[in-house]
Image 1 (cartoon, rainbow over the protein chains, first blue to last red):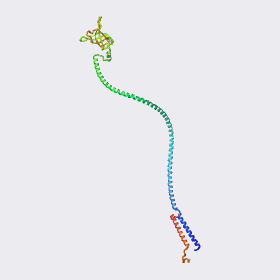
Image 2: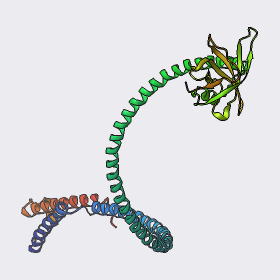
Image 3: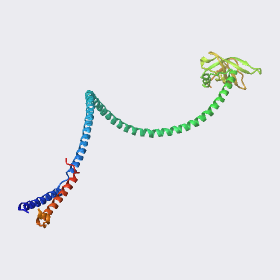
Image 4: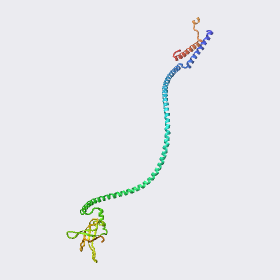
Length: 289
Length: 44
Protein backbone atom coordinates (compact mmCIF):
# COMPACT_ATOMS: atom_id res chain seq x y z
CA UNK A 1 0.00 0.00 0.00
CA UNK A 2 1.29 3.33 -0.90
CA UNK A 3 1.83 6.10 1.48
CA UNK A 4 -1.10 8.08 0.15
CA UNK A 5 -3.37 5.01 0.54
CA UNK A 6 -2.34 4.69 4.11
CA UNK A 7 -3.05 8.35 4.80
CA UNK A 8 -6.49 8.00 3.15
CA UNK A 9 -7.28 4.91 5.25
CA UNK A 10 -6.36 6.72 8.43
CA UNK A 11 -8.36 9.78 7.31
CA UNK A 12 -11.31 7.49 6.48
CA UNK A 13 -11.16 5.97 9.92
CA UNK A 14 -10.98 9.34 11.58
CA UNK A 15 -13.88 10.69 9.53
CA UNK A 16 -15.96 7.52 10.19
CA UNK A 17 -15.40 7.86 13.90
CA UNK A 18 -16.38 11.54 13.76
CA UNK A 19 -19.50 10.58 11.75
CA UNK A 20 -20.45 7.98 14.33
CA UNK A 21 -19.81 10.43 17.11
CA UNK A 22 -21.90 13.19 15.60
CA UNK A 23 -24.71 10.72 14.73
CA UNK A 24 -24.72 9.38 18.26
CA UNK A 25 -24.66 12.87 19.67
CA UNK A 26 -27.57 13.88 17.49
CA UNK A 27 -29.50 10.78 18.51
CA UNK A 28 -28.58 11.19 22.16
CA UNK A 29 -29.24 14.85 22.65
CA UNK A 30 -31.83 15.62 19.98
CA UNK A 31 -35.22 16.93 20.93
CA UNK A 32 -38.50 15.40 19.63
CA UNK A 33 -39.45 18.31 17.55
CA UNK A 34 -42.37 16.40 16.10
CA UNK A 35 -43.89 15.81 19.52
CA UNK A 36 -43.37 19.39 20.39
CA UNK A 37 -44.86 20.36 17.06
CA UNK A 38 -47.87 18.14 17.63
CA UNK A 39 -48.27 19.43 21.19
CA UNK A 40 -47.92 22.96 19.94
CA UNK A 41 -50.36 22.18 17.14
CA UNK A 42 -52.81 20.69 19.59
CA UNK A 43 -52.36 23.65 21.89
CA UNK A 44 -52.78 25.93 18.92
CA UNK A 45 -55.99 24.16 17.91
CA UNK A 46 -57.24 24.37 21.48
CA UNK A 47 -56.34 28.01 21.64
CA UNK A 48 -57.95 28.56 18.25
CA UNK A 49 -61.11 26.89 19.48
CA UNK A 50 -60.91 28.93 22.64
CA UNK A 51 -60.39 31.99 20.54
CA UNK A 52 -63.39 31.12 18.38
CA UNK A 53 -65.47 30.46 21.46
CA UNK A 54 -64.27 33.65 23.00
CA UNK A 55 -65.06 35.52 19.79
CA UNK A 56 -68.53 33.97 19.75
CA UNK A 57 -68.98 34.89 23.35
CA UNK A 58 -67.66 38.32 22.55
CA UNK A 59 -70.16 38.68 19.72
CA UNK A 60 -72.90 37.38 21.95
CA UNK A 61 -71.82 39.66 24.73
CA UNK A 62 -71.73 42.53 22.24
CA UNK A 63 -75.25 41.67 21.15
CA UNK A 64 -76.43 41.32 24.72
CA UNK A 65 -74.70 44.48 25.75
CA UNK A 66 -76.16 46.30 22.80
CA UNK A 67 -79.61 45.08 23.75
CA UNK A 68 -78.91 45.91 27.35
CA UNK A 69 -77.59 49.28 26.34
CA UNK A 70 -80.76 49.90 24.35
CA UNK A 71 -82.91 48.74 27.23
CA UNK A 72 -80.88 50.71 29.73
CA UNK A 73 -81.11 53.75 27.46
CA UNK A 74 -84.87 53.34 27.37
CA UNK A 75 -84.88 52.84 31.12
CA UNK A 76 -82.69 55.89 31.50
CA UNK A 77 -85.19 57.85 29.42
CA UNK A 78 -88.01 56.48 31.52
CA UNK A 79 -86.10 57.26 34.68
CA UNK A 80 -85.40 60.71 33.39
CA UNK A 81 -89.09 61.19 32.73
CA UNK A 82 -89.82 59.74 36.13
CA UNK A 83 -87.18 61.99 37.56
CA UNK A 84 -88.93 64.98 36.08
CA UNK A 85 -92.21 63.73 37.45
CA UNK A 86 -90.61 63.09 40.81
CA UNK A 87 -89.05 66.53 40.81
CA UNK A 88 -92.46 68.04 40.20
CA UNK A 89 -93.93 65.75 42.85
CA UNK A 90 -91.11 66.69 45.19
CA UNK A 91 -91.97 70.34 44.72
CA UNK A 92 -95.58 69.51 45.47
CA UNK A 93 -94.53 67.46 48.47
CA UNK A 94 -92.30 70.26 49.67
CA UNK A 95 -95.24 72.64 49.51
CA UNK A 96 -97.40 70.05 51.22
CA UNK A 97 -94.68 69.51 53.79
CA UNK A 98 -94.57 73.23 54.46
CA UNK A 99 -98.31 73.29 54.87
CA UNK A 100 -98.17 70.23 57.10
CA UNK A 101 -95.43 71.81 59.18
CA UNK A 102 -97.55 74.88 59.61
CA UNK A 103 -100.50 72.66 60.45
CA UNK A 104 -98.24 70.69 62.80
CA UNK A 105 -97.22 73.89 64.54
CA UNK A 106 -100.86 74.84 64.82
CA UNK A 107 -101.76 71.39 66.06
CA UNK A 108 -98.83 71.50 68.43
CA UNK A 109 -100.13 74.72 69.89
CA UNK A 110 -103.57 73.23 70.14
CA UNK A 111 -102.11 70.10 71.67
CA UNK A 112 -100.25 72.15 74.26
CA UNK A 113 -103.45 74.01 75.02
CA UNK A 114 -105.29 70.69 75.19
CA UNK A 115 -102.58 69.29 77.42
CA UNK A 116 -102.91 72.24 79.76
CA UNK A 117 -106.64 71.81 79.69
CA UNK A 118 -106.20 68.10 80.28
CA UNK A 119 -104.01 68.79 83.31
CA UNK A 120 -106.62 71.20 84.56
CA UNK A 121 -109.30 68.62 83.87
CA UNK A 122 -107.25 66.00 85.65
CA UNK A 123 -106.85 68.21 88.68
CA UNK A 124 -110.53 68.94 88.51
CA UNK A 125 -111.19 65.24 88.14
CA UNK A 126 -109.10 64.55 91.25
CA UNK A 127 -111.13 67.09 93.14
CA UNK A 128 -114.27 65.63 91.65
CA UNK A 129 -113.16 62.15 92.75
CA UNK A 130 -112.85 63.42 96.29
CA UNK A 131 -116.27 65.00 95.97
CA UNK A 132 -117.55 61.81 94.41
CA UNK A 133 -116.24 59.83 97.34
CA UNK A 134 -118.10 62.14 99.67
CA UNK A 135 -121.17 61.96 97.47
CA UNK A 136 -120.81 58.20 97.37
CA UNK A 137 -120.82 58.11 101.15
CA UNK A 138 -123.84 60.36 101.16
CA UNK A 139 -125.40 58.23 98.43
CA UNK A 140 -124.85 55.12 100.51
CA UNK A 141 -126.49 56.86 103.41
CA UNK A 142 -129.36 58.01 101.21
CA UNK A 143 -129.63 54.53 99.70
CA UNK A 144 -129.88 53.12 103.17
CA UNK A 145 -132.53 55.68 103.97
CA UNK A 146 -134.27 54.91 100.68
CA UNK A 147 -134.31 51.24 101.59
CA UNK A 148 -135.75 52.11 104.94
CA UNK A 149 -138.27 54.39 103.25
CA UNK A 150 -139.13 51.64 100.79
CA UNK A 151 -139.70 49.32 103.66
CA UNK A 152 -141.85 51.99 105.28
CA UNK A 153 -143.56 52.57 101.95
CA UNK A 154 -144.41 48.90 101.68
CA UNK A 155 -145.82 48.92 105.18
CA UNK A 156 -147.57 52.22 104.41
CA UNK A 157 -148.99 50.70 101.24
CA UNK A 158 -150.35 47.86 103.28
CA UNK A 159 -151.76 50.42 105.71
CA UNK A 160 -153.06 52.42 102.76
CA UNK A 161 -154.74 49.33 101.39
CA UNK A 162 -156.37 48.73 104.74
CA UNK A 163 -157.32 52.40 104.97
CA UNK A 164 -158.68 52.32 101.44
CA UNK A 165 -160.80 49.37 102.34
CA UNK A 166 -161.98 51.21 105.42
CA UNK A 167 -162.45 54.37 103.36
CA UNK A 168 -164.61 52.55 100.85
CA UNK A 169 -166.67 51.00 103.58
CA UNK A 170 -166.92 54.44 105.22
CA UNK A 171 -167.93 55.97 101.91
CA UNK A 172 -170.69 53.43 101.61
CA UNK A 173 -171.63 54.14 105.17
CA UNK A 174 -171.41 57.89 104.57
CA UNK A 175 -173.64 57.60 101.50
CA UNK A 176 -176.11 55.64 103.54
CA UNK A 177 -175.96 58.23 106.35
CA UNK A 178 -176.33 61.10 103.86
CA UNK A 179 -179.46 59.39 102.59
CA UNK A 180 -180.65 59.13 106.16
CA UNK A 181 -179.75 62.79 106.86
CA UNK A 182 -181.44 63.93 103.68
CA UNK A 183 -184.48 61.89 104.56
CA UNK A 184 -184.61 63.73 107.90
CA UNK A 185 -184.18 67.16 106.21
CA UNK A 186 -180.81 67.73 107.86
CA UNK A 187 -178.01 69.66 106.12
CA UNK A 188 -175.33 67.65 104.44
CA UNK A 189 -173.05 70.58 103.66
CA UNK A 190 -169.89 70.20 105.77
CA UNK A 191 -169.69 73.98 106.29
CA UNK A 192 -173.21 74.07 107.67
CA UNK A 193 -172.44 71.08 109.84
CA UNK A 194 -169.25 72.70 111.09
CA UNK A 195 -171.20 75.82 111.90
CA UNK A 196 -173.62 73.64 113.80
CA UNK A 197 -170.83 72.64 116.11
CA UNK A 198 -170.18 76.27 116.86
CA UNK A 199 -171.82 77.21 120.14
CA UNK A 200 -174.81 79.44 119.89
CA UNK A 201 -174.15 83.12 120.26
CA UNK A 202 -175.59 84.92 123.31
CA UNK A 203 -179.03 85.83 121.96
CA UNK A 204 -182.46 86.33 123.43
CA UNK A 205 -185.87 86.12 121.83
CA UNK A 206 -189.53 85.30 122.27
CA UNK A 207 -191.74 82.34 121.56
CA UNK A 208 -194.16 83.49 118.90
CA UNK A 209 -196.15 80.32 118.43
CA UNK A 210 -196.30 76.83 119.82
CA UNK A 211 -197.43 73.59 118.20
CA UNK A 212 -198.53 70.64 120.24
CA UNK A 213 -198.56 66.98 119.33
CA UNK A 214 -201.30 64.40 119.72
CA UNK A 215 -200.60 64.02 123.42
CA UNK A 216 -201.22 67.73 123.86
CA UNK A 217 -197.63 68.40 124.65
CA UNK A 218 -195.65 71.20 123.03
CA UNK A 219 -193.46 69.73 120.29
CA UNK A 220 -192.37 72.70 118.18
CA UNK A 221 -192.05 76.40 118.90
CA UNK A 222 -191.56 79.35 116.56
CA UNK A 223 -188.92 81.83 117.71
CA UNK A 224 -188.60 85.56 117.02
CA UNK A 225 -184.87 85.31 116.23
CA UNK A 226 -183.24 83.74 113.18
CA UNK A 227 -180.06 83.39 111.24
CA UNK A 228 -179.54 87.19 111.22
CA UNK A 229 -179.09 86.92 114.98
CA UNK A 230 -176.50 84.12 114.54
CA UNK A 231 -178.86 81.24 115.18
CA UNK A 232 -178.19 77.99 113.35
CA UNK A 233 -179.77 74.57 113.14
CA UNK A 234 -178.99 72.36 116.13
CA UNK A 235 -178.44 75.26 118.44
CA UNK A 236 -179.98 74.58 121.80
CA UNK A 237 -181.77 77.34 123.68
CA UNK A 238 -183.33 77.46 127.11
CA UNK A 239 -186.91 78.52 127.46
CA UNK A 240 -187.62 80.68 130.52
CA UNK A 241 -190.57 82.76 131.80
CA UNK A 242 -189.76 86.07 133.35
CA UNK A 243 -192.50 86.96 135.88
CA UNK A 244 -194.22 90.25 135.60
CA UNK A 245 -195.00 90.48 139.37
CA UNK A 246 -192.32 91.66 141.73
CA UNK A 247 -190.76 89.06 143.93
CA UNK A 248 -191.49 86.12 141.69
CA UNK A 249 -188.61 83.97 140.40
CA UNK A 250 -187.73 83.25 136.80
CA UNK A 251 -189.19 79.91 135.73
CA UNK A 252 -187.17 77.45 133.55
CA UNK A 253 -189.49 75.68 131.15
CA UNK A 254 -187.19 73.44 129.08
CA UNK A 255 -184.71 73.17 126.23
CA UNK A 256 -185.44 73.51 122.54
CA UNK A 257 -183.25 72.63 119.57
CA UNK A 258 -183.39 74.66 116.39
CA UNK A 259 -184.48 72.54 113.42
CA UNK A 260 -185.15 75.27 110.89
CA UNK A 261 -184.00 78.86 110.57
CA UNK A 262 -185.07 81.89 108.55
CA UNK A 263 -183.39 85.30 108.57
CA UNK A 264 -185.69 86.66 111.26
CA UNK A 265 -187.37 83.52 112.66
CA UNK A 266 -186.64 79.94 113.53
CA UNK A 267 -188.42 76.71 114.43
CA UNK A 268 -187.18 74.67 117.37
CA UNK A 269 -188.11 71.27 118.74
CA UNK A 270 -188.63 70.74 122.40
CA UNK A 271 -185.99 68.26 123.55
CA UNK A 272 -186.44 68.68 127.29
CA UNK A 273 -189.57 70.01 129.01
CA UNK A 274 -189.89 71.07 132.63
CA UNK A 275 -192.33 69.04 134.73
CA UNK A 276 -193.91 72.08 136.39
CA UNK A 277 -194.25 74.39 133.46
CA UNK A 278 -195.69 74.52 129.95
CA UNK A 279 -194.13 76.58 127.19
CA UNK A 280 -196.52 79.25 125.96
CA UNK A 281 -196.48 82.08 123.48
CA UNK A 282 -194.58 85.08 124.87
CA UNK A 283 -192.04 83.05 126.82
CA UNK A 284 -188.39 83.99 126.47
CA UNK A 285 -185.64 81.92 124.85
CA UNK A 286 -182.02 82.54 125.53
CA UNK A 287 -178.57 80.98 125.20
CA UNK A 288 -177.08 82.93 128.06
CA UNK A 289 -177.83 80.38 130.77
CA UNK B 1 -2.00 -7.68 -9.31
CA UNK B 2 -0.78 -10.99 -10.14
CA UNK B 3 0.70 -11.26 -6.74
CA UNK B 4 -2.76 -10.53 -5.35
CA UNK B 5 -4.36 -13.10 -7.41
CA UNK B 6 -1.86 -15.68 -6.42
CA UNK B 7 -1.96 -15.14 -2.70
CA UNK B 8 -3.98 -12.97 -0.28
CA UNK B 9 -2.21 -10.23 1.50
CA UNK B 10 -1.74 -10.55 5.17
CA UNK B 11 -4.18 -8.41 7.13
CA UNK B 12 -2.36 -5.55 8.76
CA UNK B 13 -3.26 -2.59 10.90
CA UNK B 14 -4.87 -0.77 8.00
CA UNK B 15 -7.31 -3.56 7.44
CA UNK B 16 -8.23 -3.33 11.06
CA UNK B 17 -8.67 0.35 10.67
CA UNK B 18 -11.00 -0.28 7.72
CA UNK B 19 -13.10 -2.65 9.81
CA UNK B 20 -13.26 -0.07 12.50
CA UNK B 21 -14.35 2.46 9.91
CA UNK B 22 -17.09 0.12 8.62
CA UNK B 23 -18.33 -0.41 12.15
CA UNK B 24 -18.37 3.32 12.85
CA UNK B 25 -20.26 4.05 9.64
CA UNK B 26 -22.76 1.30 10.42
CA UNK B 27 -23.32 2.64 13.90
CA UNK B 28 -23.75 6.16 12.55
CA UNK B 29 -26.26 4.94 10.01
CA UNK B 30 -28.21 3.15 12.72
CA UNK B 31 -28.28 6.35 14.76
CA UNK B 32 -29.53 8.39 11.83
CA UNK B 33 -32.13 5.70 10.98
CA UNK B 34 -33.44 5.83 14.50
CA UNK B 35 -33.55 9.59 14.32
CA UNK B 36 -35.52 9.48 11.09
CA UNK B 37 -37.77 6.80 12.56
CA UNK B 38 -38.71 9.18 15.33
CA UNK B 39 -39.95 11.64 12.70
CA UNK B 40 -41.80 8.92 10.85
CA UNK B 41 -39.50 8.95 7.91
CA UNK B 42 -40.93 12.23 6.74
CA UNK B 43 -38.62 14.75 5.21
CA UNK B 44 -40.75 17.81 5.04
